[in-house]
Image (tube, rainbow, N blue to C red):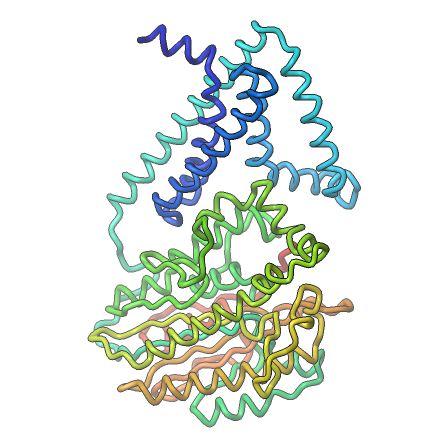
Length: 494
């Protein structure tokens, strides 16, 4: 048996299949807890089938499975690791043609043509040595990742949920329902006045009439949603390795959202959590539309060649080929999710469970695309497609429509609640799509307003950043003693 295994390592193209298993297993381990087993297995099956197809196709060229397997291995490696290589090229050759898709794809095509010829001419003994090396390498990598994954599984089984250390349990505190309403890219008053020359005081007056306290000079700490939300829901600054919004820091921000200390606090105090957002939380997946491959596997696939093509070139490609159906599907994606999330929140407000509720509602409003004008009339499709983000008038029209929908939702929540709830209304950052350069501070200026049942807002500062939002709420409404952090902003690059 031992000799048979050694013979297979030296002569069989197992490496091409082990590569697919390793890629998914490694991504599953790095994003442990975010991706269900069944989703990872489905993704693995897709990659294994693709590998089988490529090996079969290249066998027609070589009439040799080992040569076919080697070519398939390099093509699958290109698919799996393209994003990492391309990101490094952009850092090394910043602004150079060598980092552009036209050059990279042309160079890759030439490389694979040469590779086809190379594997045709390579000597048999060299072929066997290369196969032995790749099979051995993949086995070692799989064993290492397997051991590390086992450690995470054991750690998860041993860990029990406890109240985060900085909190104290508040058994005697009133426990009203809490609604955390996040309006994505809702600019604050200073930005609306100075950049848009728009007076939003009518909306603020309506909020005050309903008992809200407006934070007049509010701003976010980050200019991208996952980072801003992670900071809000953990009441802390993020430990980022860079100021780039992609890569490991993005995964880290998702992990911080999933394991939010704010949510843990309320769960430990008997609250039931309702997630009506595009983000995943523990035992609360996002209620969003899915494709053939589950959305959660994007944490694994986001760096692949096909995912990068879809992200960077897909919209341009379907625009060039005038595929109206595909363009429409992409354009109206947020509209569909907004309606679903809004309806879920509306229905949840009518429910009277035995335990208090913490409801997180995340609306991509007034975030682009700007679907409606202030009267609720749909904006023509041509003004919704990519490139129209800079239209300030459309943003303001959609903001006024958003105001109307938010007020209707707040009225419904207040009327449906047996006990006055806490309502937190905020934007995650300011408007960011400027046609001309502006002071970076405007990327952060956001809406922020709170409603407390006791109407005591003495502890809420008039000028503060999002990282302190829940610190003020927990201190004043749940007898916590959390220090207020120094306000600052971190600008993240694309």
